[in-house]
Each structure stands twice: as structure tokens, then as C-alpha cells.
Image 1 (cartoon, rainbow, N blue to C red):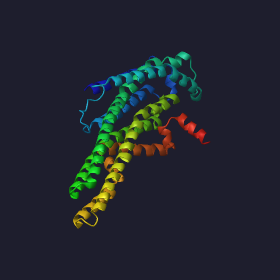
Image 2 (image 1 turned 120 degrees about the vertical axis):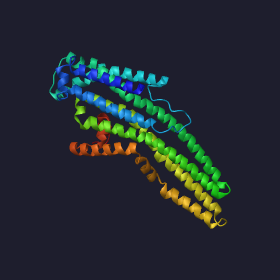
Image 3 (image 1 turned 30 degrees about the horizontal axis):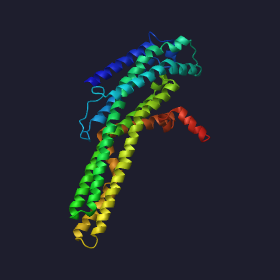
Image 4 (image 1 turned 90 degrees about the vertical axis):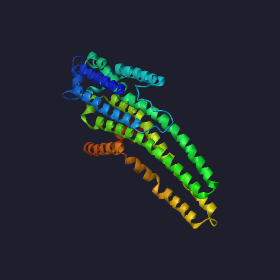
Length: 356
């Protein structure tokens, strides 16, 4: 309930900030910047879309049972830690400086390109109420998703280190354990628990990646981005990478590295058991070892594990939406996919480095 009230307050702040900046406290420069008939309403739609994506992200980060023995706390801000409020204060100070100094300067530089002219007050004045919108959007809507992502990362990585240690210990014990049939069953059972936990963890982060991708597509391939300056858009990409980056690292670490290394470790252990039993074990037992190795190499391959993650309903639905939206918008706009994800100054720097 506290989380919902938090987001209601954030949306009210966004509505008031956008309405005042483009309306009673706005200027013709601000209203003419985007070329849209009702620009403040577009800003409100942006905040509504971000709210849906943020709540979707938080729900996916918390919907699966905790992988560790710790109780799963309520989502931020219902229960919070001191570091989360300190981080919130740092973001607030950065947004304040950004709104009062950098964004107005960026708009001033962009006026000639949009055939606009205006006085200092016409450019800088509306940024004072617009600060309320920025606080509502980044602190009220986006930040809770980041805070809950940090919590989930900590829990899942602690679980992974512990589960990997247990699997490695079982693999070492199984090499010389007798009877061999029980050793194989214990090893496969431990791997099954490990793989199941990795799948639960991976499902947490795929929706985060998809939500950020959808936000970037909507911002740059619809009219929403017309209200932003180039500096605001590039900074938004950097800030969204605070969500996208850790989620991608977790996916690569848990899926590509975590699962594949565990699968190779178990397969190597089964190969060692088969070599030890060669020539002095019943045919049925040798066949059991061969079947287990074949299952590890083919039925439980990393590719199959990735597909099992993608089959999750919470993942497949936004994945289909993201792929469809990206395909249509990119074909219509003729843009490259990397232009959606990375700040333009970074792309310009890479182009200069490679002489393009």
C-alpha cells in the first residue's frame, strides 16, 4: 500500500510540474520547443508509462520466493535501509544541479536549430516548476525500481555463491563415493536444485532489461522525446543504464557463466565416475552413467536453459511487445538499434576513434 501511495504522489508531482512549466509559469519558448499541441500532456503520458514499467519491474524482482534464508522485505520505500536514502539524496542533489544549470544551457544552445528565440527568463524560468516533474519522474518513479534491483542483486548473488559451493562439494564427493549409483543420483539432484534456483534468479532480471528497452524505444521512436533536449535524452540513457547494466551483468553471470560452468563441472564428474567404473561395474550401472552424461550434454544444455527462462509468462509477454515495437519503429524510422541504447556523445567518440 505504501508503494502505491508513493507512486500516486510521484504522479501528482509529475502532473503539477509539467502543467506549471508549460502552462501558468511557462513561456512560448517552452511551448514551441516540441512542436506538439499539448506538450505538458505528453510529459504526463511519459510519467504514466514509466510508472507502469517501474511497477512491472518491481513486481518481477519480488514475485519469486527468496532464494536465500533471509525473509523477503517489503519493497522500497515501505521498508528501507539507510544507504538507500543516502543514495536518494545524492540523486536529488544531482537532479537539482542538472535542472537549474545544465538543462537550461542545453535548451539555449538548441534554440537556433528549432528556429526559436527567447530571453533568459523565458528559457530558465519554467525549469523552476519543472524541477517538481524531474523529482517525481526520477526519484519517485524510477528510483524505487533501482533500489529494489540492488536488494535483489545482493540476495541472488549471496545465494549463488552458497549454491555453487554446495554443488562443487557434492561433485568432489561423488568422484569416489560408493555405491556409485547413489553418488550419481545425489549429484544430479544437487544440480537440479542449482539449475532451478538459477532459473528463478534469471527470471528476475530479464523483465528489467525489457522494461528499460521499452522505455528507450518509446522515448526516441514516438513523439514523447520531442519535449527533451539532447542533453536530457543522453543523460536519461546513462541513468537507465544504472538499471540495465547490473541486470545484464547478473544475467550473464548467472546464466552464461553460472549455469554453463556448473553443467561442465557435473559432466566432468560423471566422466570421471564412468572412467573409474570402466571394466569392473555392471552394464546397467555403466548405462546409467552414459545416460546421465548424455542428458547433461543435450537435454540440459545452456541453450535449453535460456529457453526455459524465456518461457516464463512475465518474460515472454513483454519480450513479444518489445520485439514487435522495436521492429516496426526501427523500420519506420530507419535508425540503428545501438542509437536507442547509448548516449550520442559516446557514439560520436567511437566514430572518431575508428575514423567514421
